[in-house]
Image 1 (cartoon, rainbow, N blue to C red):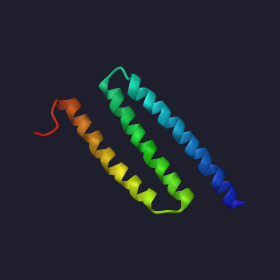
Image 2 (tube, rainbow, N blue to C red):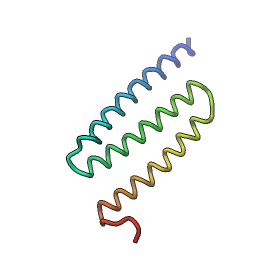
Image 3 (spheres, rainbow, N blue to C red):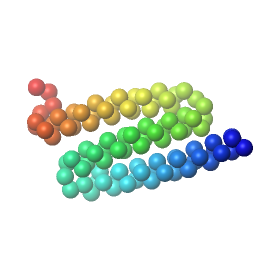
Length: 93
């Protein structure tokens, strides 16, 4: 019973994360301001990271967790760089 419940809950969470990624992609394309696009990019990388984590749980391999960690680190750095660029107009001082 618990394996079947885990399978269906992971499948449902992957579907919901895919829907969230589509909504973030829509906001990324049609965002009226740059701040909206940065926020959509942030939501997109978080959803992608969580989707990889659910794939890792479903398959039981460690490569998905390492890829999710890489996405999290690069996504955080890019969000900070974009926020600094929007605030000051330059990234490197």
